[in-house]
Amino acid sequence: GQQLNQSPQSMFIQEGEDVSMNCTSSSIFNTWLWYKQDPGEGPVLLIALYKAGELTSNGRLTAQFGITRKDSFLNISASIPSDVGIYFCAGQKQGAQKLVFGQGTRLTINP
Amino acid sequence: GAGVSQSPSNKVTEKGKDVELRCDPISGHTALYWYRQSLGQGLEFLIYFQGNSAPDKSGLPSDRFSAERTGGSVSTLTIQRTQQEDSAVYLCASSFPGSPYNEQFFGPGTRLTVL
Image 1 (cartoon, each protein chain N blue to C red):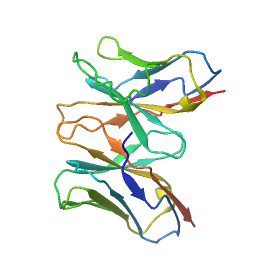
Image 2 (image 1 turned 90 degrees about the vertical axis):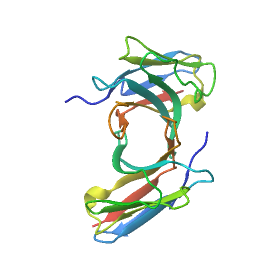
Image 3 (image 1 turned 120 degrees about the vertical axis):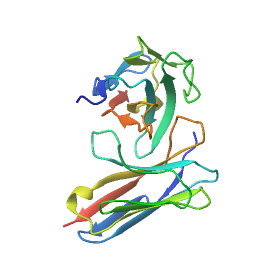
Image 4 (image 1 turned 180 degrees about the vertical axis):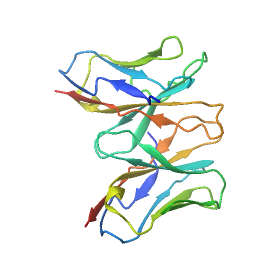
């Protein structure tokens, strides 16, 4: 099935560093979402973006909906140990209910 | 309040056997989704139920997969004659389309291993 192109696949950083990950698609999405998944759990929504060009923050997290509606990025500032996990982007097309997911970015933090 | 619950949390089965996975959505959520997550991959849409409407089955990978939702609440995903490539985590989500953002809330998943 269709998946979004998410990069990087994994990141190994020091605590306190900033993190950036992105997602691209060959087709347009009307909604972009960023989820975090902890081991043994389902994904939890972090940020939702509904307008092209929109920049939204949630605490140390900032995400942007690309102006072309074909990409999005997520930044995490001043990383802390609880940021460890797998981050997924997801897109939703106009009028559709299903979400299309990226392959995920696995974040590991060295204390 | 209770979130989305799924059972069993883990299921190990032999190739060729049938399995049933259960999802209990959040009370009041009229929309229910099934996704599959293979090892190291993102989630892949399988099927979507909304109220009494015909389900969107466009993501089901083969006719061995089926799902039903009884009484507009609990859903069961059935995989017949399981194959090793069916091994994955099966995630259920529910949402309330009348809410402003129709956020999908996910359960913890059922990890299926086909030997």
